[in-house]
Image 1 (spheres, rainbow, N blue to C red):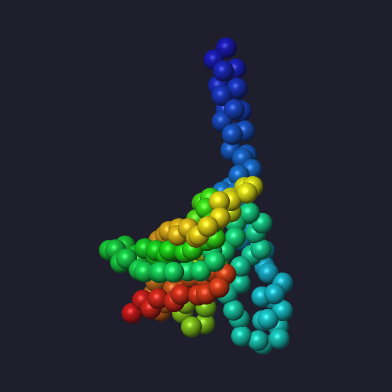
Image 2 (image 1 turned 60 degrees about the vertical axis):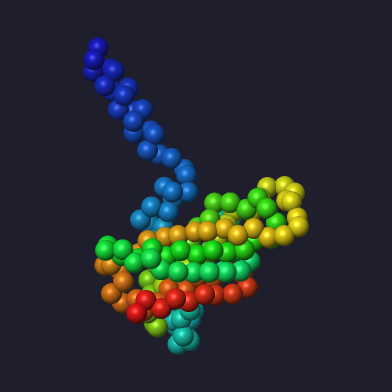
Length: 162
């Protein structure tokens, strides 16, 4: 009898691991091996490579403008913080999405897109909203990094590490 209970418990536990959330999809190692056609074409033609982002339809949009960016150094790495403006109210769920899989470009710059989820339906107009976001880069990844750049729809802000 206890064997049946253990079998049912095991089946329930394993079935809960099959989630379809965005988090599980990002953690899937097979998704990391997909290459972007634009990056492939640029490397074949010998053109300089720019940071490449996988096209992800996550419902997020770039902030209109990055207004401020700063680095907070910790013993184990650096915290990248940024503020950005969006039109109207209701924007939420900020994220710094790394470009080029978070690897530095040829100049030693790690690029991030400042992304937000827009409001659903009509938004309250009459001004802008400032949102904040942050991410952490450990010391082990900072060895070949000279700067961090954060992009919005209308501008980029670059901060030098050294």
